[in-house]
Length: 337
Image (cartoon, rainbow, N blue to C red; front, side, top):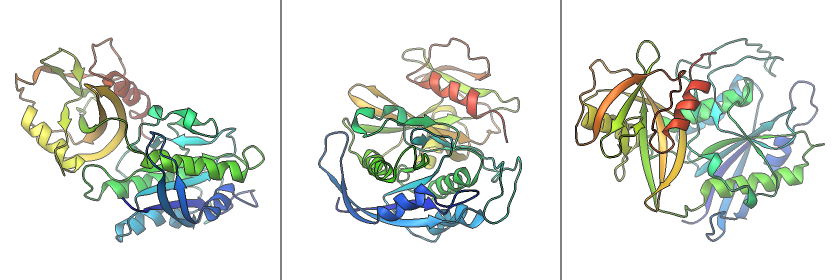
């Protein structure tokens, strides 16, 4: 595929910090590298473009604005400082909340403020499937990127990527929180960042099937589930993306075909992977608008549907990892900022 173009960003110093390790790491990574493919493929040649973001509203939207203006990359790695971290921390989710304990560098001091009206968003990488043996350092996986400019930046970038008609899903984007340099030096952080890029770009070990699954709520917050006809398991309704089909188009088509529902696919909440029949199913959970009509069941696909309270977490017979997806919804996607 040739040399991959990668955007890596860090932040300027902020608050009481005279330096920011994410800035040092980002600037040091500029140029050409060969990163390892953790799945056994050949080395991947990349060219890193570094950008240092300001710790304010303008820095938070800079990458998103670049994407809207037509700039393209094969992957984006945002990095920022985590004062409390002992290990590097990979962020799975950006939350729709800004709640600052100190002013940003522009003087903003926002409290309990929504970023916008779109809702929480997840990256389309299942970090739980990464093999830690391929990394030079242990790391943490987090579903809480904070409520400062790091989270705000991640949120805007993920939404900007999803707004474009990528087929089937956008290029990977991830936020990496780096500990203070006295806990995790710049050399170690640089190596870890390159390993993350390799994992983001790595070739899959098995054929990949991109699948979309709908998160649809009623006015009471209950979630629409469908029972499969073949094995009687419960799932978020959806199906496979067709060749060269965008994730949102696929979601709307699947719901129209299987349940005769007319919805708008809004955003990717998160991604879960599992193997079936020697194929890697990559399940993208998609927040959708509430339909005006009631679902009409195709008996060849589903036996019945129901509206399910995610806070009850009843012991249903789930399809694949759908039970984990429901636990995620109950924990992270129920309460606004």
